[in-house]
Amino acid sequence: MSERQIELEVLRYRPEMDDKPFFQTYSVPCQEEWVVLDALNYVKDEMDRTLSYRWSCHMFVCGSCGMAINGEPKLACKAFLRDYQTKIRIEPLSNFPIERDLVIVQDDFIEKLESVKPYIIPKQEKPIDQGEYLQTPAQLKAYKQYSMCINCLLCYSACPQYALEEKFIGPAALALAHRYNMDSRDVGRSAREHVVASHDGIWACSFVGACSQVCPKDVDPAGAIQQVKFTSAVDYLTSFLPGGKR
Amino acid sequence: MARSAKAVPWFLFAAGGTVIAFILPVMIFITGIAPAIGLFGDALSYETMHAFVGNWLIKLILLGIIVLAAWHAAHRLRVCAHDFGIRADGAVSIVVYGLAAIASAATVVALLMI
Amino acid sequence: MSRKPYHREVSKTTWFLKQSRYQHYMLHEISSVFVAIYVGVLIVGLFRLAQGPEAWSGWLAAVTSPIGVIFHILVFIFSIIHTTSWFKAVPQAMRIQRGEEIVPGNLIIGAHYGVWAVVSVVVLLVAGVA
Ligand code: SF4
Image 1 (cartoon, each protein chain N blue to C red):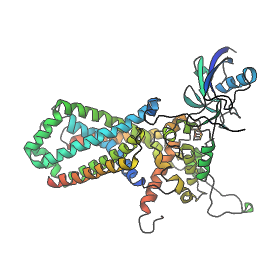
Image 2: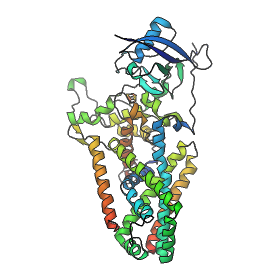
Image 3: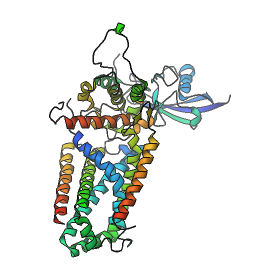
Image 4: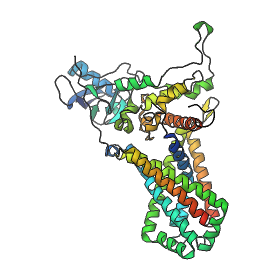
């Protein structure tokens, strides 16, 4: 197996001693088949134990290792070194405050995620001994794509409207709202509507589409949001008709 | 949080965007490019055009296209203003939607005059 | 331990210069400027048509003047940018499910291009060009 020397330029920020972030370069002996996360792990294990970053599964499932690699939001476990030149620039995901080094502050997203009630709201709760809520494969297909989200936040980092309007609920949370709205077992659409169809919800999206381009799970949040715009617009207009829901 | 009234102009934006995606290129070609290269001969002469636009069906179609195009452009201009850093969304809305309303009314008047 | 998160600023006026995908987005957003002006030109044309042969030929002269031609070429280019970017986005905004299958996006886009071609030819025929 061949080895390659890679220059990792990593944005560092140590809140207890730094006023602002700075780049630190590590020259890392890398194996051909490594991903960026492997190189970071090598730095952590062999060169500099003070470097902080999040990771867990190493296989695009946990959504922890999102970072900007050469300016592009990526999962570090999915960014193969063979696709990069010798110099790789690594920064924490943009559009989020930096907690430390490559670790970002996620609180804002977590709050927004909670605000869209991302769980099934059934018509009637039933006790477990009455069995599961049944669903056909076609009903599953209707929302499955939007359920693949791993909360990695690459989409927020790619979204210029989130960068410009910090109140924007944002791609993943809105896509997850859509995921539950589309679920045949769920009746929570109107309970989510007041957040989802508000000024800071879907209507703050101008369909740049960057979220869907960077999503590692092909969730297509941009598409989800446009679909919600359509149903919400119909809801809104029909709410003025006799018998419409206000 | 309240539901946003942006739903209404968005509907016009989406409908207009779809209609003009199909129709505008060929219309621009006919009204703006073909005459310059003399492609049509008499098709754009006063008599032909007056008779053509005089047809009530053509009037209705033109009205639909122009009104939807105006509202589509107005809503997108509002978004554009935001994207260029203008944060006075209320004032921008009044201007762009106001212009679209004037354009719609003017189209009706012009068509009735023909 | 006290926290001290570091906030990075984003320019509200030049953010779109940073990435080519943002630039593409701005390009199709800006098409609205040209569509708006073109709508104005059309409305003026309708008024001129109502006012009689002389007014109409004045409008035609303006349209075929060098500035008129340059403007219309620009509008034409932006209208194509609008059409292509709009069609590209349709499968995202309009997902069609048949049973357990989602209709492939390229099929939807292809259908749109087909209809676009038919509409264009029909309009040309009606206008008496072809
Ligand atoms: S929608 Fe995609 S990019 Fe956004 S958090 Fe979910 S998996 Fe990540």
